Length: 203
Image 1: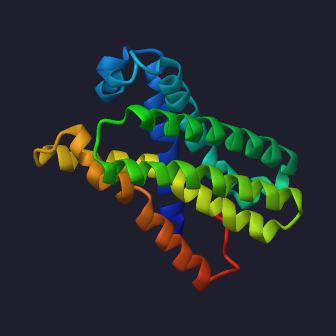
Image 2: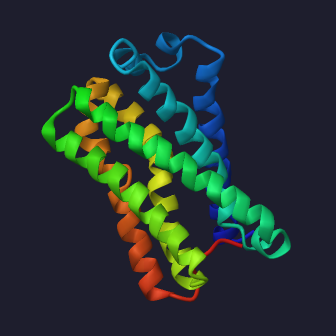
């Protein structure tokens, strides 16, 4: 097995596992599963639930949208799932920006999450617009950028435990994760796309 093959499956599995792991909030008490959410429940209960439901849906759909095989064999399904992915991002990204009105972290962290939410919606909208214009090369490039930001949900969950083990509170970790969970991935993607512009999707 090649490193590329292993990397693809690591990406796919991590998206699906984190999405399903987060959605367990629907069956278990929020204060037990994800205590940091209890901060928002009294003030923005609908908004926080929109975010924690539709964010994982977008994450779950992301690896399927990058599949060349699915797109070639089932283009109609790819298109329907793509609109579901985009709608989930619109809801999850928009709700994340509303949640920042009650954000308890620093301005540095707030600006990182604000940039993430704004670019997440914008990249996805540009990808959908390109697809509607039948510019599929541009569509794939924008959607790869969108998925890189979607994958920030996985990266954040990888980064937080060692930071908290080092003595940081959950809110303090945002000074690192608010930018660190997505900006390096996006920069790496841009380098990769500029280096190999023809390879813009996962098989």
